[in-house]
Structure formats: structure tokens, C-alpha cells
Image (cartoon, rainbow, N blue to C red; front, side, top):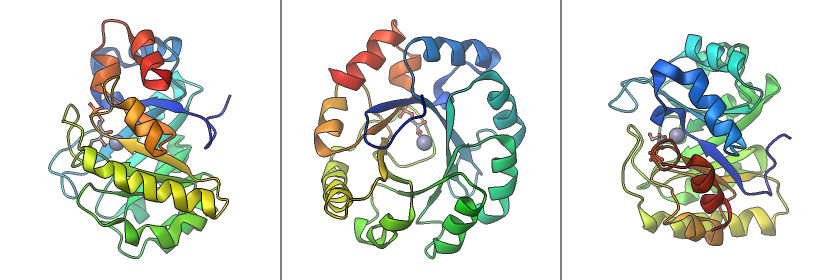
Length: 221
Ligand code: DX5
Ligand code: ZN
């Protein structure tokens, strides 16, 4: 079943997987209950790290029927929209910090027939995102500074999650509200209570002794 914006959905971040056995790790988190997969694309410029690119997304597409929630940490995402859509992404999320005028990029993503998302870093005021809520499918609140997995959750971002939740509900929108960074069994309930519905979890799922249990606690515990 496709991930929907109102249900709690767990998106394991493949950044925390073992790339030497990526297909097996995808099967493992799928069997453990993942609702979609989170793909972190880093350009070494918008963030001080490199991850993987289009050929790897194509390979992931061939390994799974889960939707690919693709998080573009890129300085210039517009020129990569087509290639990532062709590679099989189902959602493409761009950063407000990289695109202070995001409307043309969001439109380019929607015009290709997939979901478009807008992300904000922990230190970015939320006001800049609010005008775009009617035009996006996914609002991503970062709970760590993007660039690396395995960082500590910054709980001050929960106030932004609450505010965006109120806006989505009061406007009757169907935007998926996602939180990403340091999410795990210890803080997932806080994220859900604040109104997040899509929870990205990298280290807490791939590093768990029992991924099924980790996903279950993140979803409902
Ligand atoms: C950070 C990425 C996150 C990260 C999540 O730049 O956007 O998606 O990989 O990993 P954990 O859950 O380990 O913080
Ligand atoms: Zn991410």
C-alpha cells in the first residue's frame, strides 16, 4: 500500500544500511515493516558530505516496490529533477536553504508526476515554509543539521512540527509532515504527538538488534 499523508509511516534511511549488502538490507527493513524508504542524496556542497547518486537510486528502484522518499541535499536541485524521476524516485524533497525561491523547482517535480517536498534545517525559521504548504506533498522538518546520519535529535524543532501540523489541519491540506534526524524509539512518541506522520529513522532501525521491534516502537510505542 502506498504511504499516505495521514498515517504514521516509517521511512528507514538507507544511509545507515550496509552498502555492501544493500538489497538484503532493503529486504530486511521491508520485512520489518518499513512503509517507504528514505534516500539521502548529498552533493558535498550544500552539505559537507557525499553519499550516492542516480545509478544507486536506479539500483534501489530495481530492488523494491516501496516508495522512494528522496531527500535532495543539493545546492542546485533543478537540473537533477529529471534524472531522479527517471531513476524511480516517488518523492523529491528540496531544501528551502538551497532554493529561497522554491516554486519553480516544486512545479518541475510535480510536472513530472511525482510528489514534491520542501525541507527546512533545524536553525531555519518555519515562516519561510508556510506559504508553500498548499503546493507541496511533503513538509520535512530536519531534527539534525543535514549531512550525516547518527546525530542527536534536536527537540527544539518539535515546536515547528506543531506549528506546521496546525497549519496543515486548519487549511484542510493533505501534506505529509515528516521529521528526519536522530529519530528512534526514545523520541518517536514526541514526534507523533507534535504531529509528525512520516518518521525517518536510520541508525535506530539499521542498528537495532531487532528492526521489527524498533519500527513497531517508532510507530506506536
Ligand atoms: C541527515 C539525513 C538523515 C539521516 C537520518 O543528513 O537527512 O536522513 O540519514 O539518519 P539517523 O536516523 O541516523 O539520524
Ligand atoms: Zn534525510
